[in-house]
Amino acid sequence: MAIKNRIAEFEAEMREWRHDFHMYPELCYEETRTAGIVAEKLRAWGIETHEGIGKTGVVGVIRGNGSGDGAIGIRADMDALPMQEVSNPEYKSKVDGKMHACGHDGHTSVLLGAAKYLAETRNFDGTVHLFFQPAEEGGGGAKAMIQDGLFDRFPCDAVYGLHNMPQIPKNQFAIRKGPLMAGADSVTITIKARGGHAAMPHMAIDPIAIGTQIYQAAQTFVSRSIDPFENAVVSITQFHAGTANNVIPGEAMLNASVRTMTKATQTLIKEKFQKLCEGLAHANGIEIECVYREGYPVTTNHDAQVERVVAAAASVVGADAVDTDTDALMGSEDFSYMLEERPGAYIFLGGGDETHTHSVHHPEYDFNDETLTTGASLWAALVEAELPRAG
Image 1 (cartoon, helix red, strand yellow):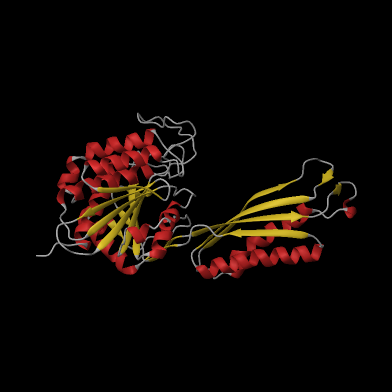
Image 2 (cartoon, one colour):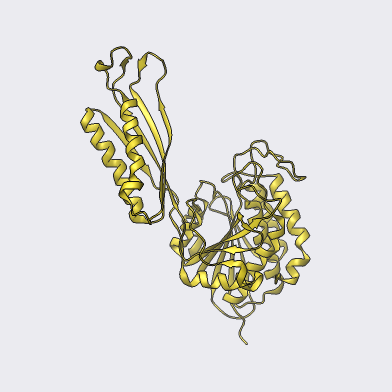
């Protein structure tokens, strides 16, 4: 592999940063310690640093040698998950009920490694904005940074992001043009019927019976309404009703998770839920409230930027270790908000080997340290290729 020599020299430091972040995980918008360490290191390396972007986000600005006005942004997420770590590495989480189960400790360390290298060498012409983002895990930190003027204050011609992937062999990359990860929505349905005695159901309107109709109908939204070649998932994940064995409750509540790869499919499923609830409410003479919440958008890669990051990845690990047509995933990612604002690409860095077999969000997951210099070298290679020095 063509790891940048200077990056290889401080690999041990990168591991130390990652292990420290891992021991002190912080949840959405709580990343004050992590952000403080990031800001401290950036300043120590002579990088212009801005804090408090999108609450706890940090932005570093590195200007290369030359007078070029090109600019790109590279993003890493910093937050952890509300999970208990069950494995016992030497750097195990010291915070009860919190752990870096998605590898954001590694993403942050990868971007810090690239920052240190780029600040030392500045072998590029233009500006690199380093986005250390809070609250990816459901908090919409990317959106918060954008709403805080991210791209007005730090203009970018393109943006790039990376995520580790244990299902991909260590130090290989995977990406695809177009939709890469799904949009993630949620639905809450409240059935307001009429309770009564379980022995006299004719005097009640049973919300459980109506709820089961909603459940069964929802199973056909994808299989009978959407093109089989279109990816979508609808899962009823909660059904709450009743408090006693001999009472028909007056109310029931269902929750659903919806994953889609296109806006048209998202709109279709939203309308399906709303029309189903309206029809059942009318048929039973009751009120059914359907609240559809649009979450993270589809993560859609832009063709030109995919080609650029693929070339950078190939320069680090070789073309044979870069899958350019990987399968799309039904997971979601709030980098999608940045991709709606600027052209860009999101790439997966493989971390799987004989000792790293657990998926992200597993209580025994751990980021693979042997990929740190690979990720940092990718960002360094991308910057030097995207913003080349004249002559």
